[in-house]
Image (cartoon, rainbow, N blue to C red; front, side, top):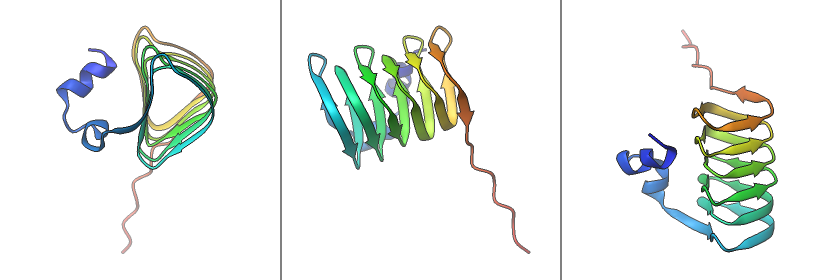
Amino acid sequence: MGLFDAFAHNPNRPVLLGGVESIIGENARFKGELHSQSSISINGEYEGKVSAEGDVIISQTGKVTGEIVGGNVFISGRVDGNIQAKQTLELAKSGRVHGDLSGGKIVIEEGSTYQGRVSVNAEQPSTPEF
């Protein structure tokens, strides 16, 4: 089962509930700094920093050179830069990353490639106060 197969079979995925408001198309090239309160999908080429409160999706045709920060980050394209997910970071088998990965939960599908460090920053359960 591939990364985007999970979207089709799991209607509770945040990206389907909130929708993607910002899209960089497959034939587009963009350079700069992109910030969004919602979700972003990159299907073309992007150079610079990407940050979103929602999901960041790099499709199979997407290529990012720069830092990515998002609530959930899903990579099935190529990223040359560090990636930070506040919640879940998923690297599909078609995903290629050259940079550090960090997130609350990290899923790396067999067949994907990455070069860098991996840091899982799962929240610690709170200790009940008596």
